[in-house]
Length: 262
Ligand SMILES: C[S@@+](CC[C@H](N)C(=O)[O-])C[C@H]1O[C@@H](n2cnc3c(N)ncnc32)[C@H](O)[C@@H]1O
Image (cartoon, rainbow, N blue to C red; front, side, top):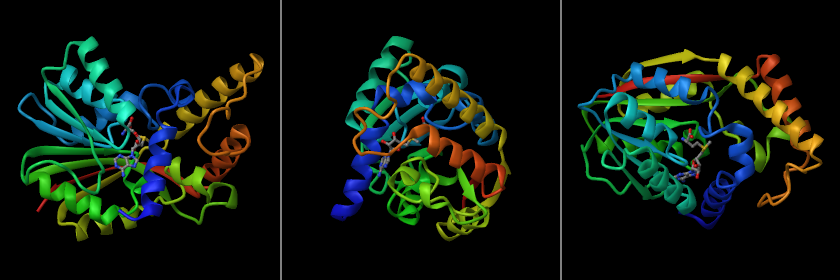
C-alpha cells in the first residue's frame, strides 16, 4: 500500500474509533443501522449454515447480529485495532464469541484462505478503500464458487459539492462513491454475476435526523462535536446541511447490492 493510501486508511480508521462517531451514528456505522443489515442478510440468504466474512466490520455490530439472530459463523476484519478489540469484547459480552472471530487487516489484503466463506458483507466501506477493484477481487478470492456478496454504500448521480469533496467527504463514504452503474460494472469486472441493486434512500433521512438531533444536544451542552478529531473537518452541522441538500437535489442516494461469485 502506498504511503498516501496508508494515510487515508489510518485516518478513516481513527475517525471511526472516536466515541463521538458512535454517539452520532450509533453502533452501526452505516445508514439504516441494523435494520438495513437484516435486509442485506435476508437478501444474501444468511443462515445457520453460513460462514460469513464482514469486511471493514467496524466494532462488529453486524457480525454479532448475524451470529446471534441468523446463527451464522462470522469473521470480521477492519483496519482499526481499537475497533477490532471493541468487537471482541462486545462479542464476549453478547455471548456470541464462540461464533465470531475478529482480525485486524487491510481490506485489500484479506488474510483468509481462498474459497473459505459462503457470504461476504461490505457495509458502507467499499468506496473508502484506496482501490475498490483490488478489494472486490480479494473478496471474490475468499468466497466459495457460488458464494454471495452483499454491499451497502452511497451512490452518486452528480459530482459532489466542494464541501464534500475533501477528506471528510471521503471518510463519510460520499466523495469516492460510484454511480449505481459503476458498482454494477465493478462487481461484474471482479467476477460477480446476478447483480441486483436496490435503492434504500429511507436510510439517509433516518441517519440525518439522528445526527442533527445529537448535534443539537451537544450544542445545548456546549460541547463542540469536532474536538479531538484527527483532522480539522470544519463545522459538522454545515457539512451535514450540505449533504442533506445534495441528497435532496438527487445528487446522491444509498443502495444495497447483492451478487453471486461466478
Ligand atoms: C463507515 S465505517 C463502516 C463500519 C461497518 N461496516 C459498519 O457498517 O458498522 C468504515 C470502516 O472501514 C474501516 N476501513 C477503512 N479503510 C479500511 C481498509 N483499507 N481496510 C479495512 N478496513 C478499513 C474503518 O476502520 C471503519 O471501521
